[in-house]
Image 1 (cartoon, rainbow, N blue to C red):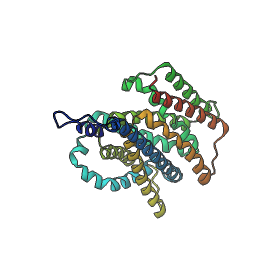
Image 2: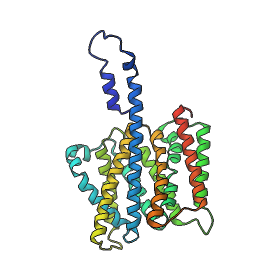
Image 3: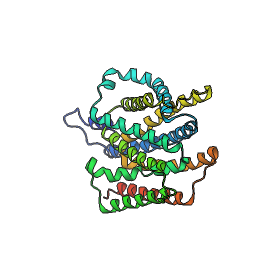
Image 4: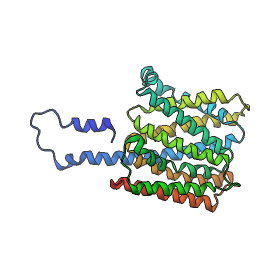
Length: 318
């Protein structure tokens, strides 16, 4: 539950010295609110993932002509223009002096690496293939939750993590002819994405505006450094698409950040599996790509492992 929302609920019980016994409905209200916020968190994650896939489709289309640095540069400028009113409302203090600056900086690095690696991988691979590797994110989150978040991870979930890793190996097709640099880039990008999810959970007390502003700033800094190498002057249409890329990405990040604040990462992160359905659909409709059997089998293993982890979390088991 959102900490502020929990404080509001607890605050209602104060005041009178000897309050009347609360009705049964009031006693149940915190649990009901917790379920409602979890449902809202799931909805925000689903919307964020759809926006991310739309962003990915446009990105794959654009990186066929423009470099990753150029895409991130123009995308980030457009995102900042959209964020400007929110940044002004937030104020310079929270933006320039965020809480836990070291963790904020780590999150910026991870988010920049993740998005750069994604566009780098998708420039040479089908969209569904890259997203299949990113589906391993919840598995990495579970594996890292013990050492980084202090969560208890029992043998059942560790077994699910190992099975999920097997799914990644199957999807990678680890032979000399098929194990490519771009496939490895996608795997490392998914690991960076998982670490970013964990840092987002640790920073859940930070406002969405601060998180997205610094995330966008990291991508902008990377774009400023990398864009001059291989610069291609965009057409008017492509310039508009590059700008739209930034707006859609900013909205997607805000949805995911809000999702992680409304509900635990273990509850909402598994819903990123909807990515593969959208990726297959859009990849077929727009690029004519269809995933092969081995990729689908690997993705199915990853998803099954992730859903098992999810159900264990819901039952409170380790």
